[in-house]
Amino acid sequence: MTIRTSLMRIGNSRGIRIPKPLLEQVGLKDTVELRAEEGRLIIRPGRALREGWEEAFAANPDRDDDLAEFGEITNQFDREEWKW
Image (cartoon, rainbow, N blue to C red):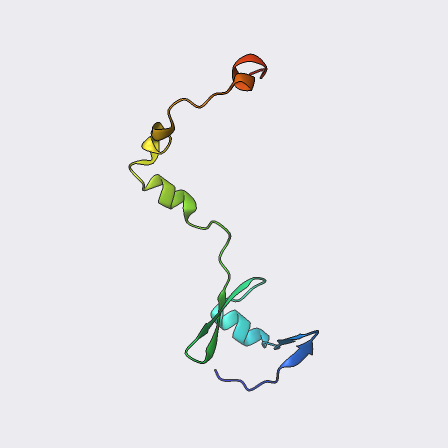
């Protein structure tokens, strides 16, 4: 589906109205990602923040070693004043 539309002024920015059928066709909801690519503006459905992080973390076999290089990190406050 190709639709011709005009840019609208929104303060110092510009906006476009995207018809509902087009929004539904590509799955656009409240959040989108914009990218300029080879003279085109690409609009994609927005992903949730940190989407896929849990799976990536679970797939990392070395995740238990991440803190090993730090050893035990303590300070005087932790040893003497902090109530666990």
